[in-house]
Image 1: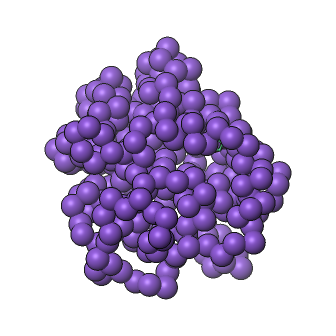
Image 2: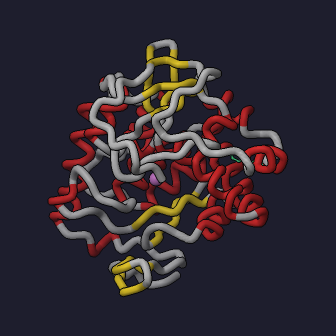
Amino acid sequence: METPSKVQHKQSDLGYVPVYATGVVEQPWADYTRDEHRVWDTLFARQRELLPGRACREFLDGVKRFGLGDGGIPKFSELNKVLGAATGWELVGVEGLLPDNVFFDHLAHRRFPVTWWIRKPDQLDYLSEPDLFHDMFGHVPLLLNPVFADYMQAYGRGGMKAFAIGPQALINLTRLYWYTVEFGLIHTSEGMRIYGAGIVSSKGESIYCLDSPAPNRIGFNLERVMSTRYRIDTYQQTYFVIDDFEQLFAATRPDFTPIYTTLAPQPAHAARSVLPADHVFTRGTGEGWATDADT
Ligand code: PHE
Ligand code: CO
């Protein structure tokens, strides 16, 4: 294990960028300040208020089983007892975003990397990189669901394969992660619900993704998702909707190698596009969107 340290910044060709340690760090739990525990409690209270009736049952169950609202920043070691017994996953502490191959290797071995530091009190609504609240509150509850837990591991293995194939395959696969694990919606018998970690960890997007007339909500289709650009700096222009986690797992089971080959020469779709073959739940009005900022 390495010693946790605050993220360093250094001048590079890309400007002033964060530089992360790529190793696993021990969660410095005893060093969190009262203010940092209070940031967790504030963010947790806001989402608990908002998410019943918005997040899927599997997510809400996970939050409860882990006791994420018992007060203060949870201990990785405590959550790991519950998680290990349930699905064999393990949380490991990290400094922040990891290089793709390191991230995939963790997932492939049922280790979920969680950033050890939490955002500042003036960053409750937005920060540009994942912190402890996003990683833990957003991602960890669903790791208690056996099907979703297996999907995450399969994604890690698929990532290692895509990494070996090349950069375009990685782009296709990253879009799948974005539109499912981070920003996925699920159409349950009770109505449209959220399962994506990027949504459930954001107060604004938890409301927008279900209530706003602006975005498209389109039925999940693997190749469609893998060929669609996305937004990293605003709420999504399109959400993809699954029926259940079994559908997601089944759709991603085939070998992607021929799919990468098929997609390679085709142009990507804009984040806002609606295509003739789409199963459209709602067609967005596009209200308030920039048109030139897809990733
Ligand atoms: N089946 C995919 C492949 O062969 C792996 C994968 C599984 C990717 C689940 C994403 C999610 O590459
Ligand atoms: Co995330």
